[in-house]
Length: 269
Image 1 (cartoon, one colour):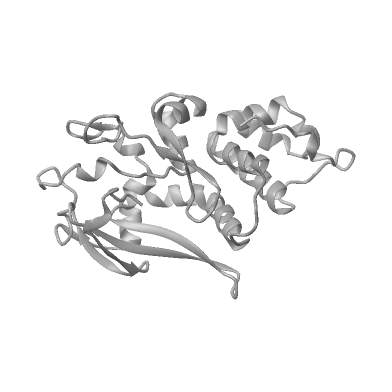
Image 2 (tube, rainbow, N blue to C red):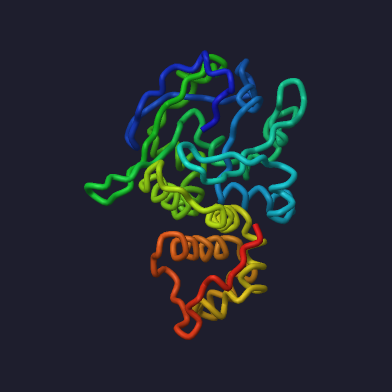
């Protein structure tokens, strides 16, 4: 969710579902154009980082170092990259140009969703995950009530969000599972390093797979190994399976019987 750090002018969000409607426009001829791209707190998802670092032709390490600061996911100690604003008077987005976003086709999912806030919650009674949406109205934004009417479902399609949400689904599940443990469960620092590595740094995780005893401990099919050697999304999917196996005890990855001690793996995050 993109929210100005000065929250005094924010109207209480209106809860919505996929069929809820709203009318909104973001165009260059609207007086507030690009205001939401300044002094914003933008949490980056795994898919965001893959798309943006590929756009910039950078490694994950380089992108994270240059363009992010470290934050934490709300009500958890789980680390998350936050987009680093410029050190100018208006604290502008580093990708903001004179005419708008310079990486528009690869912009973060938070920017794509705006003015919709997006979240999920886990229903323990039904063991199901549910999508939550909310319409965010800020005094600085003049686009409400203008342009076309959308349902949330139509907005997600129009803004190209479906592929983002699909890639981020396992990451979101990990966050929900951590929250379900409650605030009094402490996550070890090594597990937090593993979470950051597996969620946000696909290039370093790929090196970790091939340069550590990883492939001697986990039984990974040759076809999958070939895919992760050159495909970021495949690498992220393996990382998610590894995190589910190591952090929550799932059997997502099969451990080779004769080498069952996964403590051999040293995570360099």
